[in-house]
Amino acid sequence: MTDLDIAKSVPMQRIVDLAKEQLDIDAEHLDPYGHWAAKLALPYIDSLADRPDGKLILVTAISPTPAGEGKTTTTVGLGDALSHIGKRAMICLREPALGPCFGMKGGAAGGGWSQVVPSHEINLHFTGDMHAVASAHNLLSALIDNHVHYDNVRRFDLRRVPWPRVVDSNDRILRQVVVGLGGGGNGFPREDRFDIVVASEVMAILCLATHTTELRERMGRILIGYSRVQGEPIFASDLKAHGSMAVLMRQALKPNLVQTIEHTPAFVHGGPFANIAHGCNSVVATKAALKLADYVVTEAGFGADLGAEKFFDIKCRKAGLKPAAAVLVATIRALKYHGGVPKDALTTENLSAIERGMSNLRRHVHNLTKQFGLPVVVAINHFTADTDAEIELTQKLVEALGVKAVVARHWAEGGKGAAELARTVVQTIDEQPNNFRLLYDDTTSLWDKITTVATKIYGASEVIADTKVRAQIADFSEDYGHFPVCIAKTQYSFSTDPELRGAPSGHVLTIREVRLARGAEFMVAYCGNMLTMPGLPRKPAAEGIDLDENGHIIGLS
Image (cartoon, rainbow, N blue to C red; front, side, top):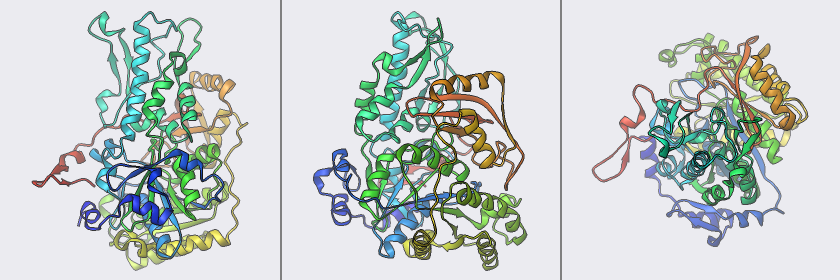
């Protein structure tokens, strides 16, 4: 059975019934999108303020490999497993983007018997949040060029307009474009670019704002250009754009409630790019879940060096969240890959490669426990090719680090396959000290914040940038030095070279460009060949997605 076949084989519970039975939410507080999904009203979330918070569990992973680690699947499996052992649990995930679904990565609703459903709807247009982000973003783009067309009162320098356009497809040809061709009636020609929707600052703002007023104010603070006279910054509020943008986003701010195959409640809301933004679901969904459940399982994008660091230093910092524990997902295949084994040989037993590949897991454990002070459990996401000897060696090596390693079979068995993992996580939260801390203070300079992440998390020896970039960082520091930093680099390595597996040390982090996400309140530092518009692979997933003779979706994974 494919993931889609499995998802369709289990009857879903009507979302209004699930909300009432499991969360005690009356139907009047829900805006249903069909029978199986609903948005939760913001006034109802506000009414939960006096309730105590549950325990927040972050699921992260070792550095990703082409073989895949199953982080979302583990997040869903752990949530179901907590329900299976009698805990009141919820799951918080990001919304999948259409680009990866039709490109190379596929969907992001989990897999096997650990999925959020209806997976085909979640992986496609869902409740329209992605379209709302694209509409609000592109409205601002249109208003900029319209302002320039009609007299340009703000005196935009057309060589310095950092605000792009967006589309929810992997379309490399749009990375660099020229707009305004065709004569004076079409505006002034200038260079522009397209990003994918999840890279939009509007998406990052959606996932950090907690009410519509804050959403509107943050969008008004977006930096959209500079005047050509004295280089003064121009913001979205200068064009009176933020009100209409907020109108387009008013429904999108409400969290989306769905369920897993085993009927565990789940919020699937927001989806910022995990390299270029903070790669986490929305603050409003996470905070609501913490009021509704005793244990909330969420995830952060890519490996712990990117996703977990941004989750802590951006999301937790801004939202005042304190995670109770981290679950670090690893696979035998990934350890062998980091130990130098090629992708086509990962199913062959190789104990020496596991020992070499442990360097990657070891550094992630060190970062989570020593740098951030969190209790950690390693989840070994089981695959059928894993041998008993490989599993035994991995557990032995992990436990030598002072953390527990649990084999989880949720992909094949659902919640019961991760019951031991759930019990271990609960026990770890109850028994181990939690000394959670952020990596740097707000008062640290932007340059020193980048250096701290690079040296303490990535193992780099130093950070370098050319004079122009350093001057721009210094300029941003004058007014925005209190912002956290978001380092955009490859997810496949601790370094900026995706081919450097394991745990490289002593490498140099080169910053090639910085951009200010003024509304989202962080600065992005771009390293290596990091792109904000992915391209399609030679054989895109779109080629295998279709409708059968009955009009049912096939090939979507």
